Length: 534
Image (cartoon, rainbow, N blue to C red; front, side, top):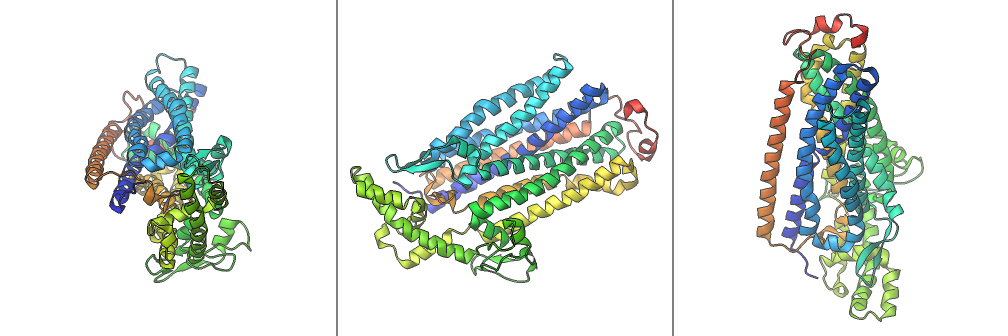
């Protein structure tokens, strides 16, 4: 087996991270707006009020722009598994490829087909028919997320598969276990609801911007109310499901959990929650001041008062033991590869199968495992811990943004329901500055999940250092720069089109300039509202 250089591995990681982070700017908004559009159109179909149809058409136009750019940025990523991560694709392709294939055949094609009907079928379909299409678009968007997160869930918690010494690969043993793994299902719900928060914040902040300028007041007032109510429940849901995801990570990925909490030492149960800390990866301790809440982390993560959470140093010791236990299995696997009739070697492989991945960690420093030194084992064991500083602060900033959005959306929902938005002109004016918050929170969540999984592409089964293709460094530099520039162009196009159509507002909107095109909105929002417009 030819092993890629460390530079090639790092460049491959940077390229995938860049394309994934770019792509993930579009995904949450697609997920969230799809259901908000369905809700708006449902009100139109059930009440017959044209304003809700015009609302759905306007926000649907912005949805279409985002959807198109999301497709353009997402297609590249699936090809990257074959081009830049060929050993990973060979080793776990049977498992990882199945949900991705289903996503393409079931969800992506369905979503793409019905998006066209939703956008161009307003005058060609009945009200009920078009509403059904809109709900199918929302369903397709979420099904697409489901299958992608099932694939990612296997990388985080590889259930439903086993290693086959004959083929020297991992093979799928239970599609049911793969689909319904705790990590995949909790991550799917958490990610989907995070998308709903993103869609809600997008609608609320843009609507508040309209209201602060007295433009499209009737549409903006209704959109703000629907978005704020949808957003409040979504933020509560994403925070609650985040707790469930932490509970799953506590058992499935203890190293990620320890890094998220900056826990270097195993502390008596229940462990404290560190609100602020400054982890030092090189010194393996927290430097500077630390602010913590006694007992909170243990209760939240283990849902008990007496279960200990292992610290990073203890987990390193466990990793060293698993590396030592994996060495006989890997040596036996090499003998079995040379002589498939060696049943004793096969039995040894089976005996140490669970720790073969840890032996691969050691091969980075000791290609000949028979010559591995205690220092090399300790070095490989330290590699089993993810980057603590980055994981810790990515998680903290994500949580902080979630609570900021919760407070904001509760305020906007309260003011909207009490018809007092105009009395809070300052809040309306600053709302547009909160538009990046959900996108940043989603990106930070992705960083927490993926950085916390390191040094593995498949947790405890396949290390990242061995998973990449053996490209030249020149090829990786060229492709990394090329994709970064292309995706920057996509971002510019997205921003240009979004800003253009937001400034333009709803085309042909009959109520659009109620209250005037500029100036105060107080008279409009405080005036009596007729029953048929409510």
